Amino acid sequence: MNEIASKNKSEFHVEIIIKGKGGHSSTPHKTRNPIIIGFEIINAINANLAYQFDSFDDFTLVPIAFEAGAKENIIPEEAKIIYQGIFLKSSHSKILYDLIAKTSEVISSLYDSTVQLLFENS
Image (tube, rainbow, N blue to C red; front, side, top):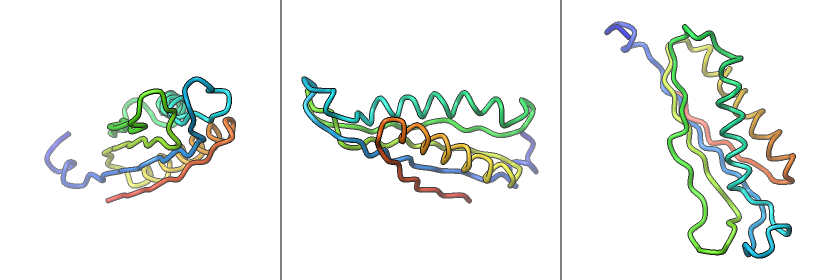
């Protein structure tokens, strides 16, 4: 990226908070494991990026953190995925937000869970 382009870049930050149903790992059938749901969301978002953008578009979007649980043998109630991106075209922000929101909502609904998105664009 040249010096002029790097001055015009925009940053994209989104947190996806998955709210499932926690429980003991000996009874996973009684839970809605947000860790499994989060993995599916990450996989689907990354797979769909290829269908939304030209390979020559100048942008990046990567998951930079996944946070869930702190106790052994306990499936947590909640998990959080953090994505960060950088792009030049302002139209990419809307496309990325729509892709992340729709994918997260559809996958979480398949598992009878919910998601909350915290979005920042600068």
